[in-house]
Length: 275
Ligand code: FPP
Image (cartoon, rainbow, N blue to C red; front, side):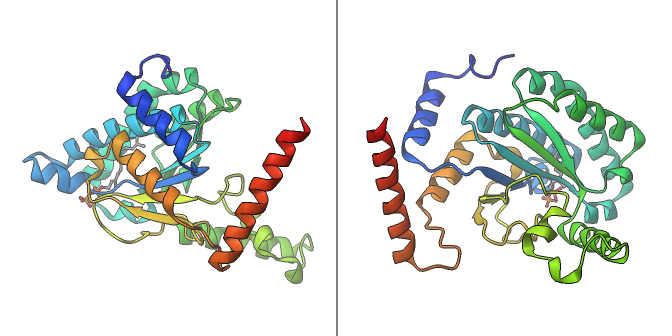
């Protein structure tokens, strides 16, 4: 299934509007929350909530690829989620397996590169194998990089990076005074990803829940009141529009940002004139 042939005219025009009027985030991270509450409100089991959540994953992945957003990271299972009842963990692992089996060919056909972050060795062997096969299959794709955060937590990754740095110092590969923010980042599992520009959290909760803690230092945060199973591409478009209206100052003052933008615009005009 080619994702670029199946869009309705209505959706195409919404995407055109976004492409023409918005500054797109390069990397979107999503904390997919509220599957359980969605299910309870619909008189269904939590399993149904997670199952329905996969439909949202499908739609959002497609929409990001169609908009040519380079990076999407989905927080699918945190290290803390291992504390849930074993029956629910079993369901989530089965759904992950189902998603990979069912979707990987379509992801591959649409040039998506799948990667994962997290303590993958904690996942059931069957899921690990499937995940590695999927990652290998799509390794050379050049479209959307879809990162699944699985058995992941930000603090875990920071501690892991610190341990690796300590080993490298002990073995003489690195000196303590050589550690910079860039060097530290290069030890994280997200080393090859840009920091997320926009983090979306569904279900109205306002916290990061251990997601990309180091990387989110300057991320814009967007909270949607919808539960994840109800969050679809129209909601993503709203989040992108909202992001596009924000002024990202990275510690500077507004006047500096405005003058940088002006200089950039002049540079672009001059570049075009030279051609
Ligand atoms: C949070 O809702 C959701 C999760 C812990 C799991 C997310 C998993 C999926 C959407 C399905 C599998 C994912 C992929 C990528 C195939 P919650 O259970 O915490 O909801 P609650 O806060 O309302 O209880």
